[in-house]
Image (cartoon, rainbow, N blue to C red):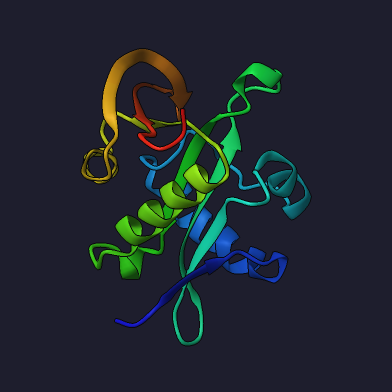
Amino acid sequence: MEYAIEAMRPSDWDEVRSIYLEGISTGLATLETDPGTWEKWNAAHLECHRLVARGSSSVLGWAALSPTSLRPVYNGVAEVSVYVGSRFQCCGIGKALLDTLIASSEKGGIWTLQAMIIAENRSSISLHLRCGFRKVGLREKLGKLSGKWHDVVLLERRSRIVA
């Protein structure tokens, strides 16, 4: 399968939103229940760190960074989001997106990436571990979705380049 990892454009939002909705519907990708509007999503994600995997005619997946805090001391720490369309999973797209996002983050001076992943989402945890993240801990009953409590695994990746 041919695709390119490129900067996300505002015009990609409908496809990004659709992939996000697929993740929401699994009950494993996120505890969110609504992808929200472009305006809300745009305000919550770092502009220089938004990627898509673009096939010949559509967006296959996306990745982006969000600040973990508005406090200046944490400007070098960001949270990772990676979503791949259900038809394109297990094709290496998630790894390509995450590897490129890591490189982008380091180029932008970010020294720590974190991911908070629902404990049952073994494939996402495995992806992050393959990309150099380590398990920091387990946050028990952190969020409730459809009446069920979920544990969340906290992973982080420290840059070896940005000090």
